[in-house]
Image 1 (cartoon, one colour):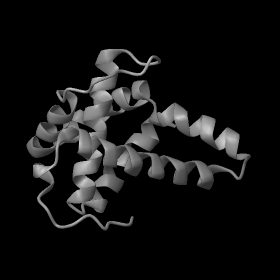
Image 2 (cartoon, helix red, strand yellow; image 1 turned 90 degrees about the horizontal axis):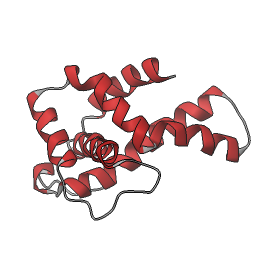
Image 3 (tube, rainbow, N blue to C red; image 1 turned 45 degrees about the horizontal axis):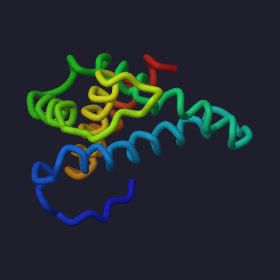
Image 4 (cartoon, one colour; image 1 turned 45 degrees about the vertical axis):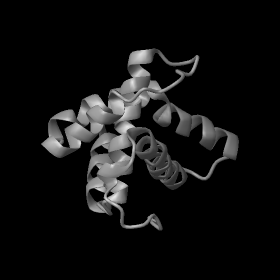
Length: 131
């Protein structure tokens, strides 16, 4: 993955900034898997991707890996989950959205730490269970 964010301590970023970045990281991983699976029309790729990156899917995903997370990773997840977001999308319930935000914050944090190995490890575990 490409990283050009400066070397600032990732713990200094707000959890919503971590989630913003983590959303992109996770979606890129899913998009790569979708393209690997099959060469298909872009609208079908998009629909298949959304099934994995929507709030309900990410809420389910964090539940699948929670027992595998370190104390530090759980703390980052909780910071993201408890962040005060100003809105919840109409197609997600508030609890799912908060859990998804925590999930994204975790991926953003790991990305800023340049822990691509850990990101890939968690993602492969999820992919096996979700696909």
